[in-house]
Amino acid sequence: MEQLRCMLNRHPKMKGIVKAREATLLMRTGTDSAPETFLRLALTEAGLPEPELQLRVSPGDDYSPAADMGYRSHRIAIQYDGCHHLTREQQSRDNRRDEAFNSAGWRYFKFNADDLAQDFRRATNQVRLALRAA
Image (cartoon, rainbow, N blue to C red):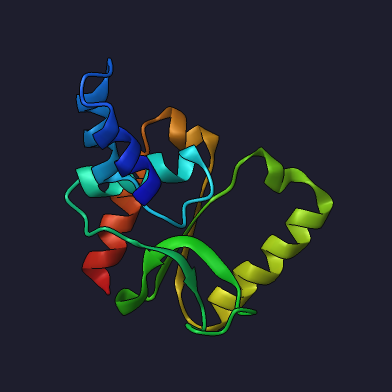
């Protein structure tokens, strides 16, 4: 991020510089894909708090399963499953991750390309309801 900001500062007249600077305000370290970013932005644009990224069941334990994002204080985990989640190996890892969150008593949401195609409207509504109930 720091290198990107330095580059943007070195080129103040570059075409698109204003939008690029605005975009850096929305960027977060820890997102694995563009759809995850779109999901996070949909949540915040809907007025929900910004979720923590790469949320582990057991914080500080590098071997603890992690969801893409969520709200630790509400025990809500959120996962975006892209097409790489369709492999047998990834599904096995995903199943272990899902079970770890469920066994620990978390509300656990999985979204995919169908939700992305609907601008995550259903996703934001489900998360909003879960936050209210927690």
